[in-house]
Length: 124
Image 1 (spheres, helix red, strand yellow):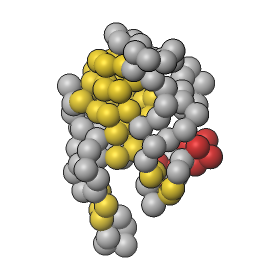
Image 2: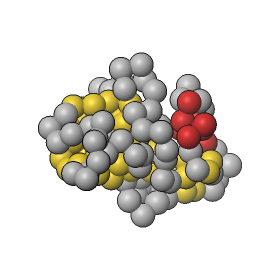
Image 3: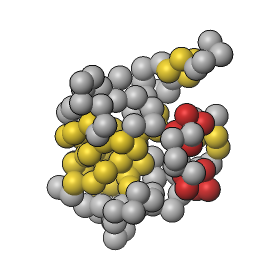
Image 4: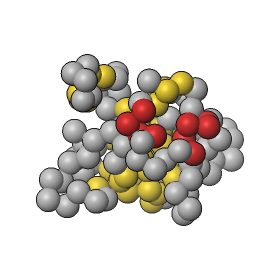
């Protein structure tokens, strides 16, 4: 369960390291977000060594791929991860980076985000 001002680690190679949620898209009455939801984030920390695609202070859209809170599947099993992670998106709703450093749950791919499966290291 993600709320506004939650901090995330970035799961792709866009150059950003830490981001903070500033708005949740599409779930106005609940004010919470779960795996597969889109949010708006502000970049708080980035990698200084390379030329990052996302720099400190940038506002970007992102999709949640991992959460600490467990997510129950329809068959009764559940998944949960060690940290909250997101993937940054560009204006065309494609991933900003070219590689993902984490596994992606299939719930993310079922929500019309098929382009994430091509760069994901594994699908759970």
